[in-house]
Amino acid sequence: MDPALRGKLLRAILGIAALGHLVVGLSFWFVPELAIEEILAWGPPSGWTSVLGAYDLSVAFALLLAFRDPVGNAGIIRFVGVLLSLHSLTHAYYIVWGDAPDRHWFVVAYLLAGGLVLLWLAPSDTPEAQREAA
Image 1 (cartoon, rainbow, N blue to C red):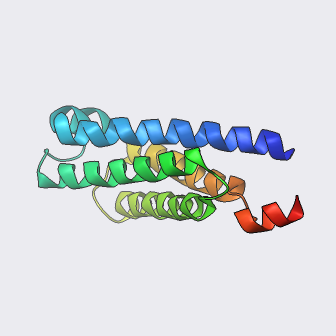
Image 2: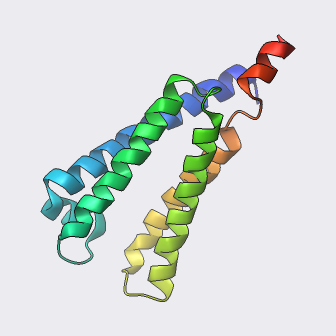
């Protein structure tokens, strides 16, 4: 893939993912009833909704940092890619062996896809290596 196109695609994905995590995180904090009803539909709102909000806001912050400088923050991009992949597998576990509803397979799919795409698009060279090559 052309490096310029790859960079544009990565930034678009980082921006969209950051916005999504920001909206979900804020909804868990400020309207947990709506978040539970619309996003999870699994259990009543409780203290753990604010924990989920903190998680999503932290992911949004990391993605926004990476958006500013994808090459310099390639490690953050890889970290979030692994984090989203593990998060998806946790949902899959609770669908198969727990009491999570089957509709969460959609959540598993988009978290895993997002994680894998971030890992695939993450810049492989360090900023120093790219400067030396130039």
